[in-house]
Length: 123
Image (tube, one colour):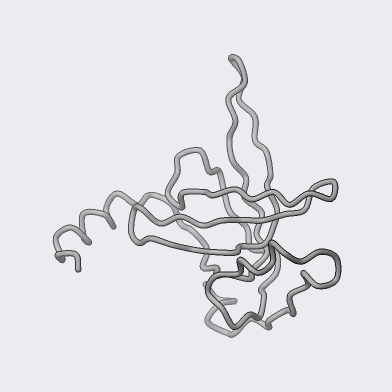
């Protein structure tokens, strides 16, 4: 249990307006990559399979299939390298951690779409 002073301090450090998303949602993470002296933005689009931590230490894991191989990447939510996060599709799942998707391929990895509520559309 964190003290209220620590929670308030972490809120003051959080500089990003991050959209609300959960496990099962399809997101596009635009993150900056430094190559040599150049900087570019690369997009990693996939399904959020887990979220963990809280406050400044919150992380989320995104999984996508590239050329027949599953690729997972873990992102800190308040990372300075993340340019923006867009929620492309809301997923309807019954679990908080979707690690079972690692064993499945093809149509078995589909997640049904969830309709957005009024609160989610206004945010």
